[in-house]
Amino acid sequence: MTADTAPPPRPYRWSLSAFGGGRPDQLGTLSAPREPSTPGEPVLSELTAVTAKVLARSDGADLCFLGRSLDSMYDLLTGALEHSPWDGRLLRLPVSCTADDHWSPAAGRRFREHLAAVGLEPYALARRKRPIALVDVVAWGRSYGTLHRHLATWIEESREPWAVIRRKLRYIGVTSRCRSSPNTRRWQQDPDNDWVRTLPAGHVTNVSLDHRVWSHLANDQPKVNESFPHWNWFDEPSTLTPRHHQVARALAEARYFTEAGRDTAVREELIRLMAREPGFAGREQRRIALALRTRATSRTGSGTRRPRAGTRARYRTGNR
Image 1 (cartoon, rainbow, N blue to C red):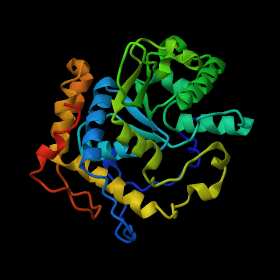
Image 2 (cartoon, one colour):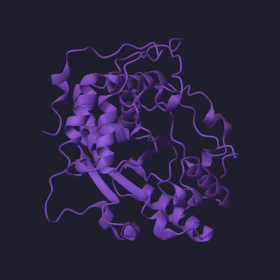
Image 3 (cartoon, rainbow, N blue to C red):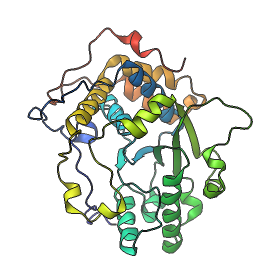
Image 4 (tube, rainbow, N blue to C red):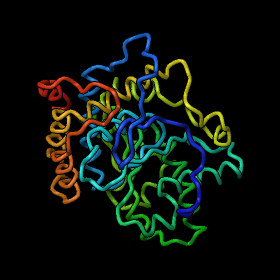
């Protein structure tokens, strides 16, 4: 896909932050949810902790969030890095691709269009300066496996240099935290995921999240957009403004995490937790920390209230 090619249709999602130079959408006319929508401080604390690890382990890569499960992490970061000097990108690839058994050739071509729209086209990958890291919740790694298989086939067909591309590509899996032991099997060790070994060491990594929060984000949390499987990739109604019964509650949670990211206490906690990671000595990680620290404070015009000040201690409970 060239710069002049329009990206494929994708589910509409409101812009809640000015990150990247855009303007947040005005949301004042939306009806309030019928039931409380604030996810709670334990969820925010855990999400802040795992977000800091993702930032520290991504080596300054552009972050591309696969699917919808980590929309809250995306929202948190767009709030935290809004008006900051960081020149990286936060991207969303909101497709569902756990399996491709029943994809038509047209669906395979459309999937490539979605990959190209976020910079995962082989020609662009081989020439990008900054690496790109896919981020998603992971149980068995099926979505990553589908994506990588199609990408590898595309790279082979295009004859772009795999030796170069493999250094630009990363996968970060947010896994459900469990008791670790020598017998614990990780998703990367599954025979179906042998593609992992084609990438350099450290380019496929995991960060663990409290299993209750993981389940909430992966299975239970209301999402602004409904799932976007292959049979909807050519369906025009899928791209219209969401009107499903949980949209008000989902949007309230999205606004909550975006506003939390703007809060000084949350940004300082992100920096503190990043500094505990071994990779924090790297130049790119320190650049992100500096961007979080020097983020300009400005009103975004979103019409939402900022989290209360003076509550820094409440964010210091995760992953001590």
